[in-house]
Image 1 (spheres, rainbow, N blue to C red):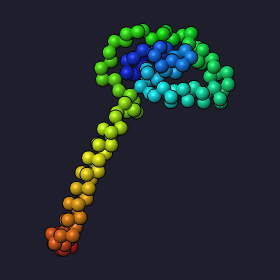
Image 2 (cartoon, one colour):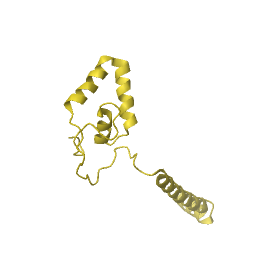
Image 3 (tube, rainbow, N blue to C red):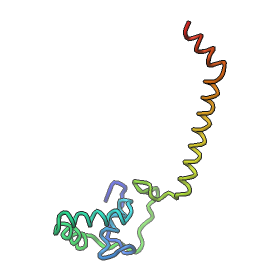
Image 4 (cartoon, rainbow, N blue to C red):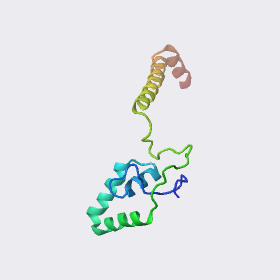
Length: 123
């Protein structure tokens, strides 16, 4: 089991060959393409070690059961699950708040109150 309490299985729904990469990705909440690229990189730079690791996963990991119990509160570590439109909307709201704060600061700096405060602090 990993830190989120999910067990590592070979995936049966996103498998290309044996389902090892897809199972690791599902277990750790990462995109499948990332784990596959890491496996290909391991193969390219180490040769047979990548093949041995994959074969060990095929033979040592159990196949994913058809019905896994629901895991409430499990979120991907890097937040890939959020909707892009929702993230863009949140970013727009944050930018509006920042713009309002900046406008308030500009109003204060250009006001007579700011000059009065500045002169008063010099005393």
